[in-house]
Image 1 (cartoon, rainbow, N blue to C red):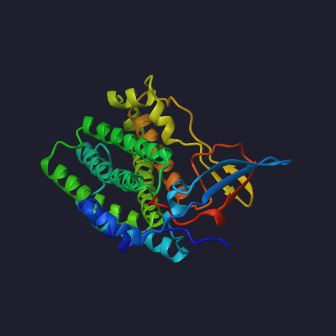
Image 2 (image 1 turned 90 degrees about the vertical axis):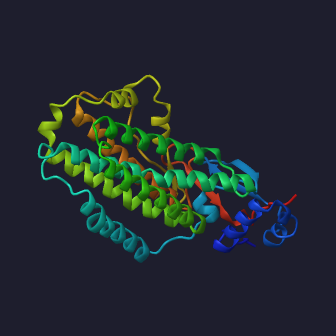
Length: 330
């Protein structure tokens, strides 16, 4: 009989933090919340002629945060999230940082807008890392590649931020104040959402990244000629064309989806990326935002796993019947 997958709710998350603060409570609180199990989780990839189990690990390791802790979202919820993010962008963000009709009209305000965007948009990846570190500490979830992926994404967003700072986007105190304080509260908001349902957190960030892509794409279309005449910032040249492109490549993870028994592999960009002028820089940033949006969409799928890289069309099977409640106690 298939066993119910363990998903911590807000009640268990609160008691988890309580147990961190008061270690003595571990002896009588945690055992009552989580019961020990010794089942295993198996993920199999089969060739056309012979099925072979390639990963059978202890119950502390599972396919993904979405599969282990998530609840799928309805289409209505996804549509609502997208509309909510769009409303916040147009009614609040665009009011504080209005888009210039032309880049040459007020370049510093255009860069300040992108500085604020990048300061805020990188917070979810810090939130994911914080929660996943907590889960690993407690023995609930231990998959290093998810930590690596989210760190690579945060590293990518950091360089977007550094580019905007080199362009002068953080020159004014009021811009730094608004962006940094908004980022602080946004970080804790995403932590809370990720604790309750990582699929919801990924879906909200997908909507944010899609809006970021549209913002950069519109900016490129309106200012192509001007941007092609401007020199690329040094930090952009070093990041996109430098010798060490490890984290840039890691952000473009070879993701696959197990779709009706067949693997579908996501295409990724090749690196290094051409950077000859400021236009190329914003094209690269725009494409990065699209990569983030695609990755967020991928991570919402409970039939997915970033740890296995296979050929497109290979047969696959994820055995969720063998996922049991996480064993915390010996």
